[in-house]
Length: 320
Image (spheres, rainbow, N blue to C red):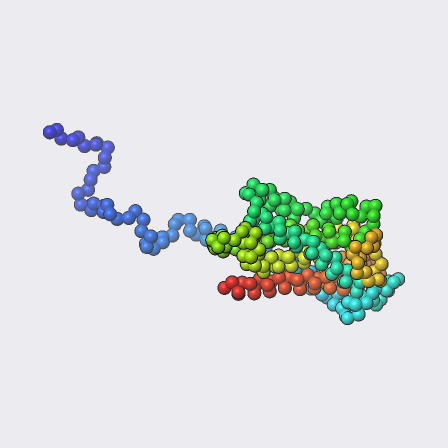
């Protein structure tokens, strides 16, 4: 038998070196981690990004504190029970309050919530539970587009549909705010419904329940707190809108209470328009009432946000 010729390019073997163990793993997961050469650079970049994020958060908090301090400082002197319940003076001057405007704002926002909340919840249920993938993507894109649309465009559209030729009204303002609230409620409810475990749906299917029974009896009760929270946040977002309300519900008598939003050619007093009107008058007393009205509106928004956060915390404790 002829001997096999060795490869002249192969390195010479060291007879003293131990042979590798073929059973040894290529990577030992229990071995301690060894720092790589660029560890110091990565730590520096991580620290820089963390510092930038912390600085941005502090800047946003500082801006919020400046706004809150300014509004509280200039508007706290106007707050009183009479300021919240009485009408403003007919010909300007000191005294009076924002009673009609406060009641009108509550009516407009409440009617907008009644319009937007059921539609938003139904849209979110259809997107998450019934629609196909392509239709769901299309509807989500439409909701995102509607959410990013400037509120003044919504006001112009509602003005052309309901106000032009007929006159301003409270329900036109409610419809404009409902359009603003709709994508916020729908998108928030979609995220909450997605968090419902699929095991609950599978258990309902195993019991022979129909799809709509599963949605109404299992999915909606499980996501109830999140739906309420999203609705409250949407209400707080729409309560301070001025541009659409200024177009469709701004010509009113600020001294008279109005409780019927469906009265034709009859706008309802509201706080955002009253703040705008008072700020345009060359009267120190009007400026004081404008700051007081701004403080009341800000307090309403803060209360709504606090209620939403409380519901989120309570639902989290119950889930735990």
